[in-house]
Image 1 (cartoon, one colour):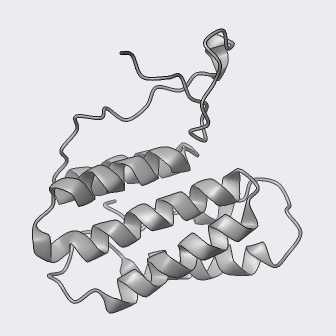
Image 2 (cartoon, rainbow, N blue to C red; image 1 turned 30 degrees about the vertical axis):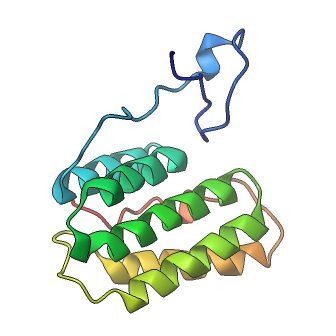
Length: 150
C-alpha cells in the first residue's frame, strides 16, 4: 500500500490534493547511522521541514545502539516539538520540548559525534518561551540553525 501524501509539516493530504502541496517523505526503510541522521536532519531543518527531522531521528532511534537510544529519542521528541510549533500547537510544542530537554539532560551514553546538545537545549527553551507568546510568523525560523553535522 502506498504511503499517504503529506504536506511539508507532515499533515496527511487527501488523495486528490494539489501535487504542489505534496512533499516526499523520509523513506520508511532508512536505517541511518549517526552522522547520516544528523546530516539529513540538518538538511531538512534548513529546508523548513521539521516533521522530516522528527522522522529521521525516530528512524535512527529504532536502529541505534542501545546505549545511544536516550539521545536519539530526545532528538525525535525535539523534531516533534518543532513540528507542533510550526503547526501552531504551542501546548504540544512545549510538552515535547520539555521531554526532549529532560531526555538530553539525563543522557549518560557515549557522545554523539557532531551533535551540539547545548544548541538543542537552547532550541527547546526557545520553543517553551515562544509557546507563552503570541504566534508570529514561522515558529521554526529561530531553530533552523542546525545543531547537527556541519
